Length: 105
Image 1 (tube, rainbow, N blue to C red):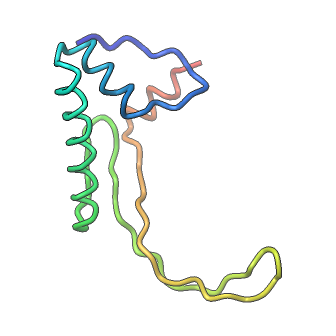
Image 2 (cartoon, helix red, strand yellow):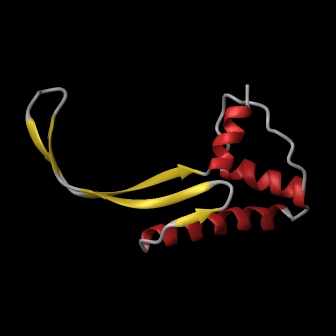
């Protein structure tokens, strides 16, 4: 598998494009490539939903963070509102990913 840099693009990388790249680079069938990408994201989603941290070496960490309730303000009306407690997903890039991004023009 080559590590050819991807040219900058104005569009986002989609799951379908990921599956196409697996098909082209690894030699899996199109259906196997799609299934692999879908399974990869399903495992990440399920792990996060169960409260587990997801660590991908050389890429980064996904974590759940619980935000406490706090007072807020409606920006249109200026009215005070209560912002409820909620869980959010955070991502922290690995040092390798940060370094790679800094090397790009």
